[in-house]
Image 1 (cartoon, rainbow, N blue to C red):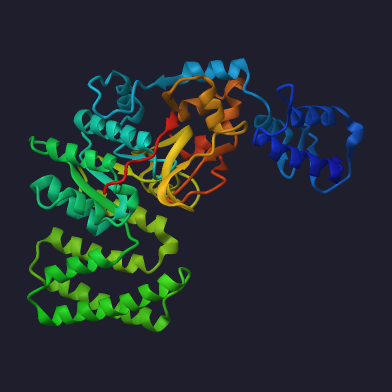
Image 2 (cartoon, rainbow, N blue to C red; image 1 turned 90 degrees about the vertical axis):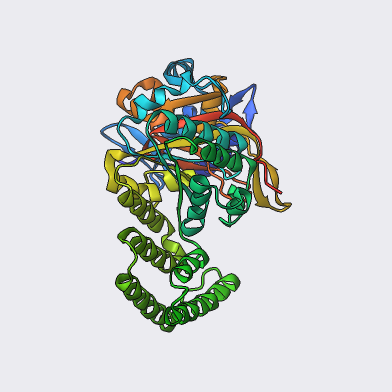
Length: 464
């Protein structure tokens, strides 16, 4: 049996929802949308035949544009005392985000929660939150000192990231210059430098941390690696020079048109050049690992021509790192969007491949500022504060400044008091650019294994 809600009422409801979600429409502190929904769902006379709303006869669930009214109430009602009590009793409070903190008692739960997973992904809800960067540094420090993790891999171009490893292991180069050499301003921060310097200090002991990256948006470092490997062979040098010329032509075209697709003629030309380089590598006297590394740089060149498949390629590159270091445990650093286990993200590909060996920790905050590129250029911007209908709004309601929540356990419990967590709400997601609407619908329990909440963010500190 179908029941339909009058289209005018639907329009009014949706308008009111938008207003309420931004805390704009309340009467005596109560949401008018909530009252409207209750009134209309109790009054069957208001239900008419219309294609935008249906009632499931078995469960008597009224749908508006495919969303159950019971789900809509999640967006419109303040969290109940029972819901807040459940959250309060299921979090693990964290004392600080400061990586220099002496006490690690609050982090010990991580070893139990991570279990035997050998790849742990640390996300971030923006690329410019100082507190999230510091918290990740603190976790990395703890896991590397206490749980055998020895490879760090960041969302930065692969060959350029490996240059930093030479600093960590041998002390070669200037860390600031090497960080800047990874292209993205997002990592050109004091927080990243502090972490790199800690890794260098740690590496003076017998244990070693290796610094790697898995991104593939630029071919420059890969061309340099290939050129250095065959610098005494003029024939191969000519081949590499010709390859770079073709790549530069397409790169200039893409600067003017980011949606540009390489021509079939140039694609065929590049493929032939790369295949000849593969043949040179195969016939060289380099050891197996060096040959594999040079071949991987050819893959970076190929991948850089197809940015649309970036997440798939980043997953492939991380799996290559893992294949070269089968006994190692890896910590990855990337945006929440890339590490999550859903959609066409890197994390989805890694989860499909590694199964339980892939473990994700998402990060978010309630309010504050962050570094981004926007109307004022590269600087700090005010974050959109969380509102009713966002996960962060509920997280903030228990007044715990920093905590960790096990989302897997929440799914296992499946209680009335945690139903709000098990469906879709809005969640902050900001990349490198400042945007006006920072919250998007998602199912947090499908995206991540754990979530870390920090009440307030300040901007990451850019290096001069």
